[in-house]
Structure formats: structure tokens, C-alpha cells
Image 1 (cartoon, helix red, strand yellow):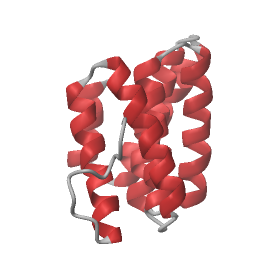
Image 2 (image 1 turned 180 degrees about the vertical axis):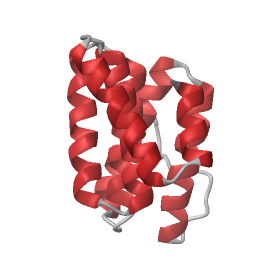
Image 3 (image 1 turned 30 degrees about the vertical axis):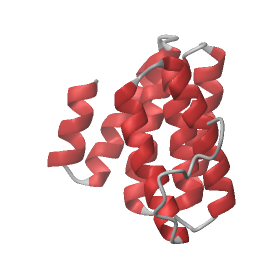
Image 4 (image 1 turned 45 degrees about the vertical axis):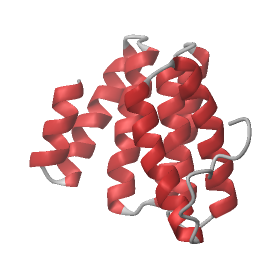
Length: 143
């Protein structure tokens, strides 16, 4: 699924990528595979973000969070929560995005996944730059 996602986003139209991920979501749901269903929803969120469909983004994030939570899938839950923070960040709901990013930071730090922390750090950095904050201490004490 991972390679298919990369190829769909890189080489196909957003509509084709959406169709692939929606088919993945349906199949995962039918087969009772919540991990893959959450992944498919997270991929659909990326397409929805690229299309600028805020309502769809939020609904899919919430669905992915619910599915990943029920499946006790901490990694996909962190991805879904980060996507939700991005969805808040894009229309400049900065406080909501900040709270979401900090929650995700703590979750990813507990997972011990450096690659995910790097991606999150980029999103947090972009948010801080929008505030004009270029300090290294943007996570605050005890983060």
C-alpha cells in the first residue's frame, strides 16, 4: 500500500489517487482490517488537502482517529492526529493547530519514531514561522 500511495500521488491525478485510496478503504473495511482502513483514510486526507476540501479533510481525520483508536494503532493514530492539526493549520486556526501538534509530539516521542518526529518538526516549524517565532525553544519547557 505504501508504494502504491507514493506512485498514485506522484504520477496520477488527484482524482485517480482518491479512487485508489477509497477502494483501499472499502476493501479494508469489508475485510475487517482497521490498520489498513486507517492508512487509507490518512491517504485520502492527503488527497483532500491537495484538493482544498476542508470539510472532507476533517471528516476523514476524525474517522481515521476513531478507527486507529479502536484498533490500538498508535502510529496511525499519530498520523491521523497530525493530519487533523494540519487541517487546522491551513486555514490559520493557529491555536487549534498548536495544541494538536503538541499532542502529536508527545505521542510520537513516546513511540520513539525519529522519522515521524522530523515530519512533525517541519509542520511545527512552519507554524512557528507564521507567528514570526524563529527560536529553537518553541516547544516550551518540559516538552
